[in-house]
View: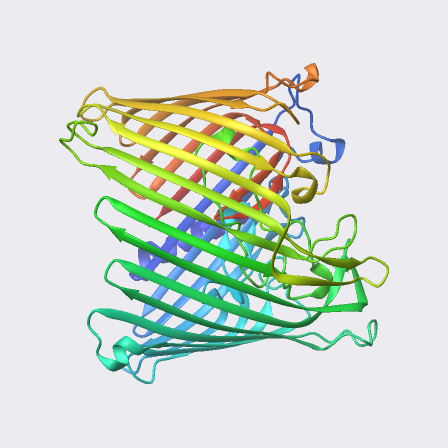
Amino acid sequence: MKNTFTLIFLLFIKNYIFSQLTLGLESNSQWYIDDDKIILSEEDAEDRLRTNSYLKADYSIGNFDFTTQLEIYESKSLLNYSPDLNGIDLGIVQAKYQNNKRNLEITAGHFYEQFGSGLTLRFWEDRQIGINNALLGGRLKYSPVEGINTTFLSGKQRIGMGFDLSESTLYGVDVETNLSTLSSWNDTDLSLGFSYVGKYENLEKEYDLLPKMVNLFSGRINFSKGNFYSGAEYVYKSKDALVEYGIINQESQNTGNALLLNFGYSKKGLGTDITLRRLENMNVYSETGLGGNIYNTGVINYLPALTKQYDYALQNIYIYQAQSNLSFDPLQKAGEIGGQIDLFYKIKKGSAIGGKYGIDIALNGSYWAGLNGEFDILDRSYDTDFLDFGEKYYQDIGLEIKKKWSKKWSSIFSYLNQFYNKKYIEETIGEVKTNIAVAETTYKINRKKSIRMDLQHLWSDSDTKNWMGGTVELNFNPNFSIYAHDIYNYGNDDDLKQIHYYNFGSNFTKGSTRVGVQYGRQRGGLLCVGGVCRIVSEASALTLNISTRF
């Protein structure tokens, strides 16, 4: 009922009082239903109907912008979201002054920010994986001359609802200098950046050996000329306490560091991008005791998995997540080292192989391993060599071919080979090797109507073994579609786990409003967005998604 009153009140303001007010609503609801294969636990079954809803209002007047977001998690948040997201409360409240003539921006309240690639600091919201780690405080952005941008910020981080804040206080400074702009270079772009992030947390009463300040320093450079581009960033983190199973070990304090290199070349019909990264003990949380929590609560920096983000369901069963933390139990790990490469080539139109429309070919691969070193389990100390590869964690090689046969008919063929070290990534047991093939085709029936189908198969002789799957999607027009999708673990040695994970649904879009309804089963495992993941459990549910903006 409170939600309804709030919505009516904001609609009244929108339509009758202010003309510069924008409202956005997103609501994701699930009604969990047991079936013959998937049954909720008794605890989860107590609240079968759950909703995550976000009502956001933006108002502008002159140089001022005001934003607030109401968040509703009733009767509880969707399964596997943090239990701290509960009830109805404000999510963010923000006031911002912006003066473009003076190159000045001042923000008070909650805000999002990123320094460099995010290795030192990233505050952002991603509702799909339950992250909103906004900072509540103040931020100043100022550009004294064109080509120099500075950011200063301080505050406490949101670790639950909008005003559930960390005990620590965060400080940050970022300076970005574009030398090309300052020197009026026309054909070359060169910029330098420096970031500092400090966390002040006083745990002296419980842990008298812990430092009150944890500091991160970062330097970066980006260079591009013609079709070539490159970038590098290095981060140093001062000593931080080891956290295992949520327990702070003040006797074990270690520094951390990160190195990120990226370079590539691109021109019409040809492109390549290479990214290399080394992470050592780089997890940073606004409260030390939050280290390693499964909800990403209190995370300060952005450490995504650097592999290709695949499109198909079977390609996302064995999905890699970055291994940046330090641990001694049950396994000795201090970070990861590796990289990924993407190649793109277009066979020209009109050639013997390309045919009338040409062929797009994309090849990608990644390799990630642990840091090789010596670990003392009793003392909780370790030593690693900077460029020495240890245990292999993950490897993939993928090929994708896109071919347009006619004005109405196009296809995608994809092959993926994976190695997934389940023992080190999930800290369970085993290694998994997979081969995955996908064929997709789309046919335009007329100007508005089309049909899309895909077939998928995963071969594996270990873990859950073979899978198969497919999708049929009928688009009646750009606004309305229906679909059916299923993946089936027919190769599982356990007959009870040979489950169809089917889904049937429809989407309707009109203007800025989108409504989606779906019924089916969710496979348990990792759900990842942009390389950041959260764990989801098996469930069968009716789902309703509504989003609009006006």
